[in-house]
Every structure is written in C-alpha cells, then in structure tokens.
Length: 418
Ligand code: SF4
Image 1 (tube, helix red, strand yellow):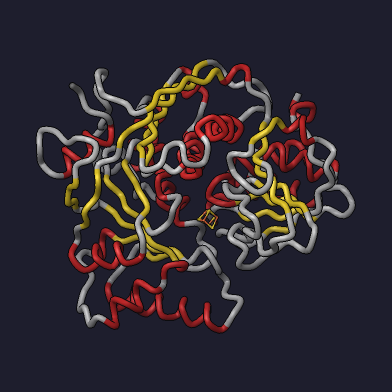
Image 2 (cartoon, helix red, strand yellow):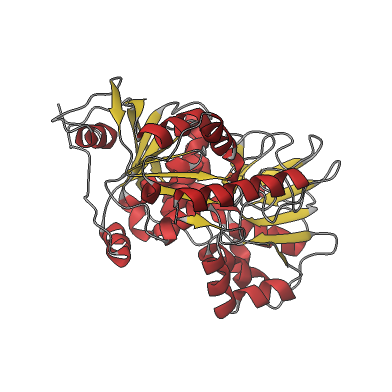
C-alpha cells in the first residue's frame, strides 16, 4: 500500500523507507517558528540554565500578537525576547510591525516544499500550501526542540479533500474552506493531515491556497498539504531555496475522502460562536454591523486588500461602521500603497493598524463593545474572541467584509464585483 503525504514526509525525515499513521517517530524539524505569545519559552529556557539553542539559523521569531506593546508587561516581554535573540544569534527575528510570523514564513521563503516545520501557533499547518508538512506544538514542546533539536510526533491519519470545478465570481477560497469546515465540523479532522487536490486549485494563487490550509486548523487538523503544481514550483523557484517535492502515492490509504463542487458555491459566513456554524451570506444579509475587520493570518494579504479596495474605492464605509485594516506584513502594506489600494481604503474611512495580528485574538487594537457585531476576515469567532463575550463575530471573505462595511449590514459581495 502506498503512503499519504504525511507518511512520506515522516519516512523521509526519519530516513526510512516507510512510515504509517499511528506510529510514534522522533524528528528533527527543518525550521521552527515562534512568536511573542509564547515568550514563556525564553523564560523557561533561561530558568533551566540552558546555554545555547540547538541551531539559531533554524529559528524564526516575530513580535506579532501584541505589538506595539500596550502594557508594561508586554513591553518587558518584547524586550526580553529581543535580548534573547541577540544573545543567541537568532537572525530571523522580526520586530514589531514587520508582520505576522505566518506571512513572514512565506514571504521570506522559510517554508518550502518537502520541509518539516514546527511552530508554537495553532495555525502553523498553513504552510501545507507550499507542499511542506507543518504543525503546531505547545511551548514546552518547543522548549525541548530549542534544547535538543528533536521532538516526537505521532504520524497523523489523512483526509483527502477534492475541490472540483471553478470558483464563480465573488466566491473565494475563504468561502470554499468555510463550506469544507461546515461539512467536516470543527472536530471532523482531529489530528489528521488534510490533503487538498482537484481542478479548482488551478485558479487559486498561493494566497488563496494559504487560506485553505490556515482555516483547516478549525476542523482540528495536525497538518495540511495542497497538491504541488506549477504555482508551487514557481513559488519555490522565486525563493531560490533548496526544496524537494513530496507527494502522496495514488494508492495511499485515507481515513476520510470528500469531494466538493466549488462551482455551486455562494459566499459563506461562519456565524457566532463556532467556525462550523456556516451559512450563505445571503441568509444573514441585513444584520447591522458595527465593525469590519480586514486582516489576520487568514486574510490580510495584498489580494485581500485589493478586492476590498475594488469594492470600497471611491465610496465610503457606512456611518457607524469602524473599518479596521491590519496588513499581514510590511511588504503587504508597501505593495498596497504602491497599487493605490491603501489610499482607496483610507479614503473609504479605513483605519490602518500596524502589520500583525491586530484585534484578532482580543488583545488590543479594536476590541468589541457590549452587543456589538463584527464582520471579519479572521479564522476564529469563538465567544469573547475579540475581547467581549457579549459581542458577535461573523467570518467571511475580504469581499464580504468590504461589502458589509460599505452598506453597514451583512452583505453579499457579488453585486459589487460584477
Ligand atoms: Fe493567531 Fe489571529 Fe495572529 Fe493568526 S492573526 S496568528 S489567528 S492571533
């Protein structure tokens, strides 16, 4: 019997001919990433008296969750991280405002096909979009890797997700993955590797593939993989790094297999307070919105700002709607400025936040008030996620967020993109 992508990666990384789902293996990651939300790793590392990290060249770290610091404590944690990175010679250390770690991993070519990557963030499976196996781990696991270079994993079972057809106008990868999550449910792929394949991928640039993998976390995946094609190879060649394509065998064994016809999809929304509580935008149309948030590792990329500018350009957000924009990185912001999209969004009433997570995790920069409703491009809408348990978060594409900001109520974006 053949191997899935995950089985092949674990076989390759352990130097064996084969690996099987369920096996426990010890692996040395190619790259590890962490962020300011896990500053405790540094504190524990120092408390244990460990002298040096195992390989500073393999560590990526960005201050993205709560920068610029808004409390004395967070300022002190950032300071401690800067000092640690300097002392340990961690050169891939990114200051406040450089962007989200997940975005930086792709922009800088730190994630490449065939790599095994570990990160202390639940959305680390995002790098399956480039053909890497990436997964999230806890802070104590990362501490172990920093000390020894190695960690044990259970080889995951795999789900094959076939996306057939072509995306209709006004429908994006965000709508596709929300429909996939609705179908699987929030726990439907727990500790699985989700493999995406099918003809619909041909129309999806890397930014859209990233969305598929990023949101897959919300159905419990351990890792993801998007079928490698010319888009993947062009991405890898652009970054010039050494890479090795790994693909599943045709006779691999899957724990689940589902097909979706994306041609039949409409814009979708994840409604409060679960990401698998998914309905067509049209079913929720007309509900008043107080805040529209464009950003996060799910959808803060140039393509998202571009479609929002297309809808909002020459217009203005509805009275009473706060339009917040957090670009995924400084490079995204710069590109949006050069293309005129940033100006269009500012003229439409948008407020630009520093590149980073923004209010996604309810830490700072745009928390919700009592009874308020936010339409957001983020990946989580749990009760209280944006700082108030008595508020509501609806998750949709950048187009849905922009159209809703324009009208002041939840709005299907398709008429604005015709
Ligand atoms: Fe987590 Fe949100 Fe930051 Fe993404 S943008 S890493 S989901 S806090």
